[in-house]
Length: 130
Image (cartoon, rainbow, N blue to C red; front, side, top):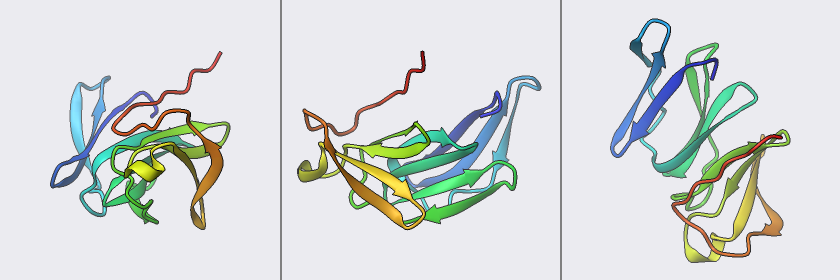
């Protein structure tokens, strides 16, 4: 985000740091509202979103503040991406939702009808623009 690298959370850890390569310096930013593990992160609409075990949150770098988001049921091991102005959580969790795709909306997470062909958990996803 804006040419900087963010290191976020971890097991039993809600700290967050940003690396500025121009100054070769790490700086602490606001802590995540609660520790979130086995999570995925993505940039969506100039903010950082995270979603995983124990919760979801969004970080606004303009205000240096996190906001807790509604919890996506059993989201550990999910992959989070921003695609076509949508924030999507793909797979993860328990076996019955590992083929599912969820879209985040201000009212919460909504399960979409589309499903992946193969159940996936603790995986990665990437958006490639041509």
